[in-house]
Image 1 (cartoon, rainbow, N blue to C red):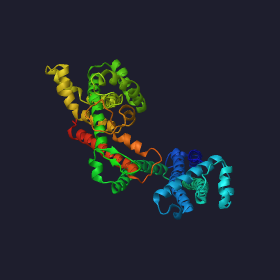
Image 2: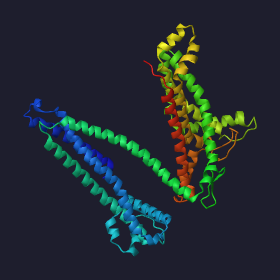
Image 3: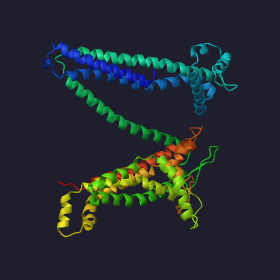
Image 4: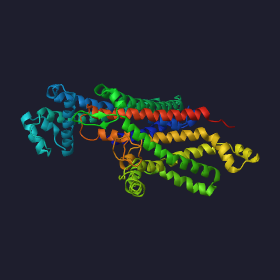
Length: 481
């Protein structure tokens, strides 16, 4: 039974519990709802929530524990002797068993019948099920695949049973308490408060988990590769065969260069658009122009990347790079920067527009009353008053530019180099994170672990920009009555 089916069944059980709880409360009061402490719907909600919350908690714990239990069973079936104590080989053997297990599930084979065979007949049974087994595959791998399928099936049914039991027990307990004296509204409000606290906690724990996972893998990388060579190296040349050069500086240079070009495009256009829409445009023009401008933020980045690859890159190459003798490639920093700048325009314009509109009209009226023109009022009163928010929007757009991937992949190329020529192909940190994790590579090698070091570096950069933006907004914002 899939997780979606379990959730649908729980929702159906909660709906039934709602009506049962509501009816029981009214019946216990002899049909006079005035005798109840709370409105009847709160008794129904209490039963529904008491049905859902324990069952969902059991489901969450089960979904986390089942893969761990399955991996332990698979590892035990393979055994440490087959891997020779090598953790990398152990992970490869487990991956091989996982692929065979996927074949068993897809073939809908009789796992119990196959598991009852002796080791010599296992390969033939897999072949009869339509699963290709390489010659010389150790029977322990086949047993591990059978263990994975069997454990997942058994664990899934156990999980369904426990989740259903938790939901039914919760519903029965809540139904029994549904009497006139029960404070159902207070119980529902406490449950909702707990759900809100849990949602906030999940967000915090998820962020901490992301940071810690990158941090631990970065530590493993720095144990295998010198930190000085990584942070100050000027050559990026990963080789999974050995003798890699994993210098950060070329990737950092490309990231900052592309982001700078993007901001040079996005900031003036976005800021001027925000000033026009908030200070000059009429209601009809604003009602049309603002949504059209914000459509740019809803376009998928892969579409921007294709636009850079097919249109902007060849245009810049044929009209500027080749005539000026600056390069012959359609993939360049300028291509990615221009297209990314277009993508960032609504980030700057929307936030700046909101900040400018927050400036009190009395300040504009006072400036105009003193004889200033409209443009002078905007330059000397409105923009300075809104400047902290404008700077904050620019820094947030910068953090968005630093983390962009698809536009850079298709528009800037993959050459890790340090060059001042904007018409040369370069690459960024995000592109190399993707490239280092793609393919069937040894996860414990420095060439793969470097992706986590790059990710942590990128996280620190964007976090610093976000913190700086928040500090500027809070430090210099004006409070108006």
